[in-house]
Image (tube, rainbow, N blue to C red; front, side):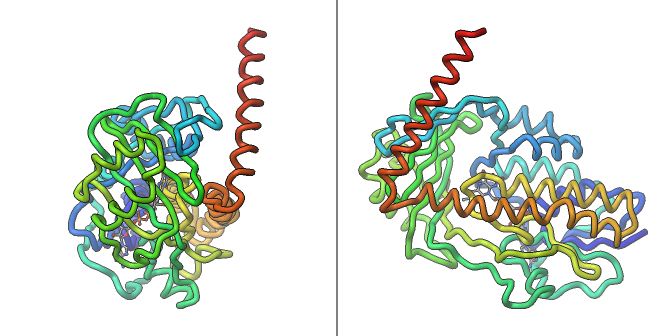
Length: 351
Ligand SMILES: Cc1cc2nc3c(=O)[nH]c(=O)nc-3n(C[C@H](O)[C@H](O)[C@H](O)COP(=O)(O)OP(=O)(O)OC[C@H]3O[C@@H](n4cnc5c(N)ncnc54)[C@H](O)[C@@H]3O)c2cc1C
């Protein structure tokens, strides 16, 4: 049996443990959190992440516990739509629910070690850094210059009871601030992001909520109603951190997956999806190939794609959070929106 130590039992770590062949590997998960989190907002699962969930045997459960996302709109702060989108490609699932399902797919043979890891375990087997944006494994492997850095953006988010009205769902792009609203398991999932001096380490949720209410006082009634109902107990607040660019994810007998390898801004909603795809790809390769070949193939499949997404996500963030160029940006989106509706109408009439 080959030994695999997974540092971090979050999305990537649990998915990898669920994927590795228990007949071939002796797996241990090291997790600092005493239990799975109870509070968390919705993660959008893109089609490739759904394929990864299917390989773990969890797609059916995720679809039945999550929500199929059919429509979306980019809106002005007033609520006026700039661009409407339709499709059935995404599934939204709450992070605690997703973690619970991934945890249930971990074989009983996997050992669990509670507590924070500060140094790489001294083992002959494989060590996997699945320990998120502030990865200790990445630091040990690549030195202090690989430390994560805070962006100027705060992310405040939560879930409130009651489903939102269809005409209020979407992402509101203001001058240097975003607000998002979507249905989530019988409630409403919301998020807000803007530049802030709060943090960058620990952020007080009640203070962040107060700042958010003031920042969004000029937004539509729907946005203000959501923020009025939000409580510190059902909300989360943090500065957004990103990892530096990396050219490879494996060195010797250590490999990085998920945010430890490529923490990105949340603007494309891809971080958790890519963490799942990393884990399923790496697990599948380790099951099939000798370790060295598996790690090389993992790098070829995953590094360029995820590093490009990291960059694209930051670019998207800069457009969404534009300040001085905001009127030009909105005029451009409006034009795109008109073109999209004309094409849709033409397609309808030619049917
Ligand atoms: C505001 C916001 C919104 C987002 N929205 C989306 C979205 O809609 N869709 C999407 O795909 N992604 C989204 N993401 C990104 C997503 O949350 C991350 O990409 C994802 O959580 C990464 O999973 P991970 O398992 O790599 O890391 P994490 O989820 O950070 O898990 C790391 C685990 O390792 C543990 N750990 C850390 N250090 C140690 C240590 N030293 N010893 C032991 N254990 C340790 C932690 O406790 C944790 O359980 C969003 C992120 C943010 C901030």
